[in-house]
Image 1 (cartoon, rainbow, N blue to C red):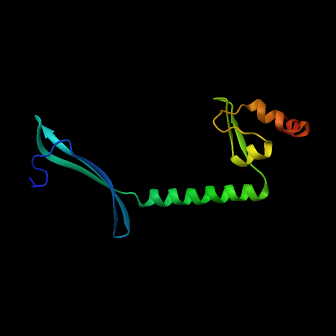
Image 2 (cartoon, rainbow, N blue to C red):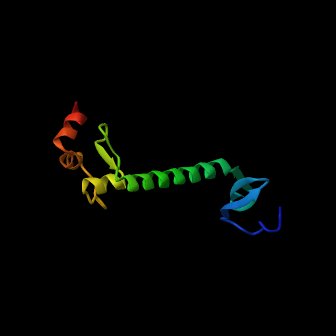
Image 3 (tube, helix red, strand yellow):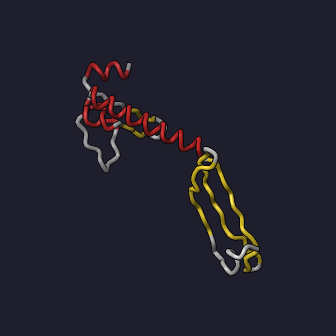
Length: 124
């Protein structure tokens, strides 16, 4: 067994080990014990390049949408009938005049903020 593992127990590692041949690699490992004694080491290395690329693209798209809504003065909201949950963009809260920071918004608040004409269109 390698000298660096001798006498160690409870070892666990998880880290981003950098790029290798253009891939972004993630390493996760732990020691293996048999009857309380260190008997080996197990590790998994994963290429997370695609996930990191997708996360960066998502962040860029979210920033673009936020900036577009801010400039245009529009926002979006949706109501999930199944769980009765209202989700609102930051811009929608500003346009509707709501301050829901730290609270769960209710659908009645959104409906009350809409004009009668908008409500007729929404409920038709």
